Image 1 (tube, rainbow, N blue to C red):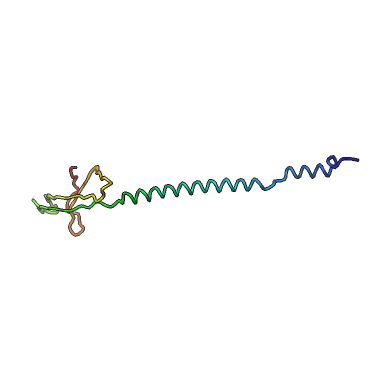
Image 2 (image 1 turned 30 degrees about the horizontal axis):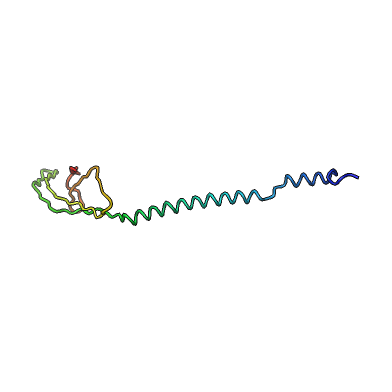
Length: 125
């Protein structure tokens, strides 16, 4: 009598079972994706937490500028051209004790009723 493994039906059945997907690999792929997603979310959380801590410690605020004195030495209209000579004293105050502000360059100009009346002029640092 032939053994159960050598019969044609038994051999075909054994081949089908080994080639059939067990479904376990899809679970492993999902677990890998979950771990990657969790790592990315954890990294984003840590970065946002660091930004929040730095902001809370430094408490950044805008610098304040105060116009202390303004003197007009010359104001002349010749035709369509307006010529002016002004001297101003401006005080800059940095309210942050923990942060320094450094400027590469500063420019200023005068306005009157939201109309610029002088050319932008560089301020020496």
